[in-house]
Image (tube, rainbow over all chains, first blue to last red):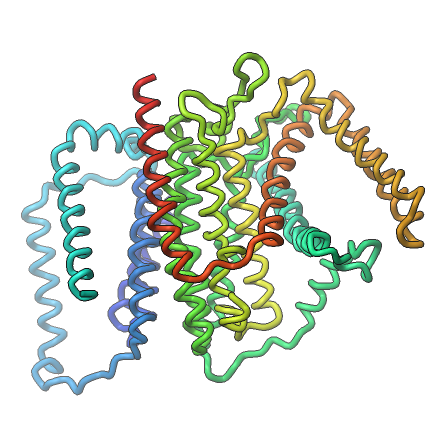
Length: 167
Length: 394
């Protein structure tokens, strides 16, 4: 009962923040809406029993990544964006095309993905740090290591580029 | 229903004690700093300025709440709210003692035992930078913005060594829940060396503890790392434009962060509520400490430095005698002794905070960053590698 109420509240928060992210004019407001989305997603993970994932979401996305976003926005002193006068094509066909896209996406998801079961809150127990760690170091060891090397390469690339700017 | 009532009582108790601690921490800080600098500190309000925190709260509440016309209103009002909420939330998962039995009801001395406790603390500290960043940006003032930028950069940089050294006690304890981590440090080597993380075999975490404390100073924006509010460069940093209760929110969040991070340091490195001596002796340490303090008070009252001291010091002495008696009653000891040890360790670390503030000058900004990335980060990494190696081999 409490699970369902919390789910409804945070699902609504996530959707509203998502819309606000797109509709806000100012970059800072958009970034903060994105934090709202991340935070409510973390609560949804928590409701499903994935406590480690929820905390990782808050630390990595809610904390580190978004702080860097906001840091850059403040540093560049970005102003509110000016609305451009929309073309007549976008004004007329925008909404119908959006609805078409959503319909096609919905159809594809239903057709491609296997039928989904009903979610029972609290029935799944594979979300603890032990479970995640075990999976990362046994079943998914190769992808995990490959991603680590990929991230390392990205870091080295960033350092090289920054160094070139300095010289 | 029983769980609900017990939780409610615990929340009220923790909230009341936490708020009082925050108010009086500020009094202690002013007193200790004053004595370090050969001053007397607050003396006017109440005996030895003991009513000063109350007076400060009234002053802050009754000041005019200014809303400058040039600020971004929504975020300007939101920022202190975010800062204080996130600062106060972490205390809810800190365990203060073992499982206790009050009139047949067994309960933890903790509001709730989260099994990813330490990750929760890290998540909250990762998000809490938004309070400062938004305050600085929305104030629309270049000094505030500089303060906020410095603070964001500093908190991101020092979060790395902080997280790396937090991993080491986790490797020793093999658990993420704060209660389990503290309980893994119970017991003694050879009957007298406590198994706290800083002494624990196979790799004592003394360096880890030092790195943690240095990074904690930077995370809480305290001297010598208080660049975000450096008075001589930035007026007051990110909270320059704030007044009245909104300023009090930032003030409170700073002290709340200090208390929380010292609690975490105690739990991770200093064994939580587990005493320094084995149980038969350690149960009488609180009584001995309070008795000693009481006699020190009486001794001071014989030769009063000021006229009213001959009345106030005996009163304090009697207070400490009552405390000593309370801690000597065996039925209370199972509850009070762990609290004494926990509070004692936290108080020692908080005293260190103030001591350092009274001793060290402020870093320059480039020194601060240089120190984090070229010294503290490699040290933390080396510490982690060595700990992992020793844990794996032995």
